[in-house]
Length: 332
Ligand SMILES: Nc1ncnc2c1ncn2[C@@H]1O[C@H](COP(=O)(O)OP(=O)(O)OP(=O)(O)O)[C@@H](O)[C@H]1O
Image (cartoon, protein in one colour):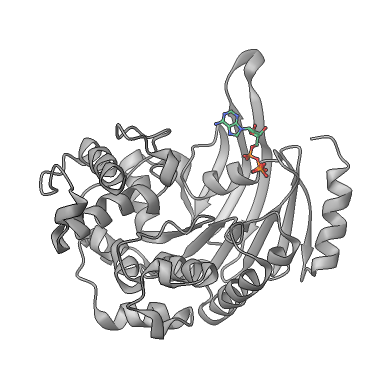
């Protein structure tokens, strides 16, 4: 099964990039360190940047159930320049009359209807709303994973909707971090090796100190050598956060990061995330169904029926839950 999964990832990666340096077949019985690196790089390219959904998203034949852009090349040169405007940008992300319609004609579904929103630098925003209200679509459009059908997404003033796929892919890889519900850690790699993956994908040799610093940021400095199955769910998600942060992105997108965690581990993970946001000034946007998770944000914006339906500043579990109860009474 492991071999099948790895080969599926490999084929996907090779298909996208013609990556001859990766071995054609992976045999778990003959695993060596190079195999592990190959596995990690190909799987990570798929998982980290939304190329395919994790796990079941990759079929054994290597086809993705949906395909988005994947990091091209590994040159680090582009990453070194042009980042300063991000550091000083007061509004790292702005959505202007953002719309998304899936399908056409009678089958058309409006997922987002003219959403205008700003996310100030250093803010932690939760996005909530009833099922089908457009939360995931908003996150994916804001992160450049999906193209809107109308309006603009400005990342530090750059309109993502006007970028070619290759430029957009590079921008995602270098300036945006993702955390998913399912962690997407590579089981065969230690916490430290998992965190090193985005740097390796960018063609960099990770420095021990920066990996340690990333783990330290999420309170796991003493777990560098642990494999994912030797960590709790909350700790695994914190490793995933550290991995998202190691490239020093300017915006972190989190899609249901507590969805697979129990209440206590959710609290542990959210505490780490909030103190990270407060300490580093990282702009964070998190989609969640959970009022507990939302209560850790500075602000909650609500969607209903594809439109903005208000916001709460300094939310509490109670105020968020009350607002959600009202919204869930609306048709959507
Ligand atoms: N690829 C797609 N093709 C067609 N319709 C889609 C697609 N993705 C989403 N939709 C539709 O767009 C609307 C918004 O979906 P979205 O997943 O953004 O909602 P959500 O608020 O994240 O829902 P949930 O809380 O259930 O995850 C829904 O009506 C959904 O059915």
